[in-house]
Length: 101
Image (cartoon, rainbow, N blue to C red):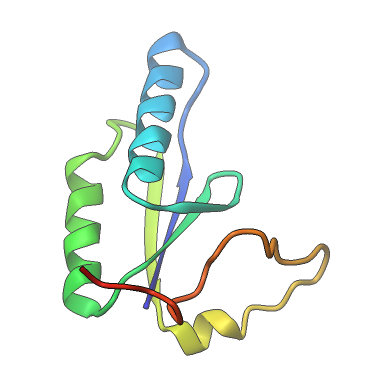
């Protein structure tokens, strides 16, 4: 299962830029990979773990702007089409070799 986080945060003020930076830093520290600017993705082992990740995002949400979360299965994610550009293959981004400790 994949969790996609899409956000659009106001960065017109210093406080807004700080919240953007802190939210982005939180996502990266939580294991999210950047798919595009303002779209991040993370693998979850099951729906319970995905719900836990979403709850953690809710706890660390910025005070303003738009943050959306979408949960998709690996099968749905694998059907993503690239209209322009291509996938970055230097980052391990599958659950095939995942080791759960």
